[in-house]
Amino acid sequence: MLVGTDKLLRDAQAKSIAIGAFNVENLEMAQAVIAAANEAGRPVILQTTSSTLKYAPPAAFAGMVAGLAKESKVDIAMHLDHGNSYELAVQCMRDGYTSVMIDGSTLSFEENIRITKQVVDAAGDIPVEAELGSVGGKEDDHEAENAYTNPEDAAEFVAKTGISSLAIAIGTAHGVYSGIPVLDIARLKEIRKRVDIPLVLHGASGLSVAAVRECVAEGICKVNFATELRIAYSDGVKAYLADNPDAFDPKSYGKAGYESVKKMVHDKFAMLGDA
Image (cartoon, rainbow, N blue to C red; front, side, top):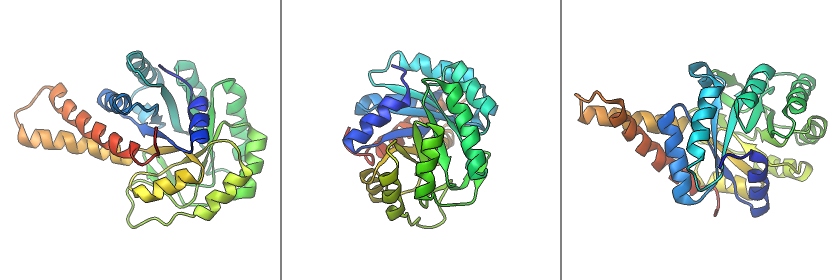
């Protein structure tokens, strides 16, 4: 069933677990995430970034996921990740996305509030995620320096925007880590004291099981995974073509990518707490 993220994240918050949010780039990746979710009996969030929506429009991804969700035994949400404009957020909502993120983290505090509130007002009952501080690194077209979230600013930001969930910066980064990230758990605890809406952790690809579980124990309700899924899909396709150099049917090597992604998603579910 296709649902919004608000109830999923509130339920996760009450149970001290997190919902896995997985970026997908094509049909096979979407199928793999949903198959793993059904096998694990866990609700799941599928996401596309602004860059992915240059590859195919929001209506294509929303329609594909809506069709797959009809056969799902678990709840599925369709989410815009790192929405880079008010216009794109509105387009995604009109085309069937069940939640959106507006990312004004590179703007001034006041401008971030302004554009986020604009999206919240347009969204009505559709949940809106925003980011305060800045998760560093590069993911698709999104690139930023790491700027940690100020707990006092977080409380003001939530109060003035009316968002449903807040992505915070505590030391994670997008892309592949070059070293072992050091997460500011004390900062997470301070934000949690001041903010009662679900908190989101971006840049989780490459984090250890222990690191993710500690974040979940301290109040993270949604954990995003992107880079590792892309690597898994590509590695599965490469391995198949290396063993079958004469293969020409996209379904055959697409299935190999699918299996690789499904295994990765199961591995990530194990990090997020008991379903």
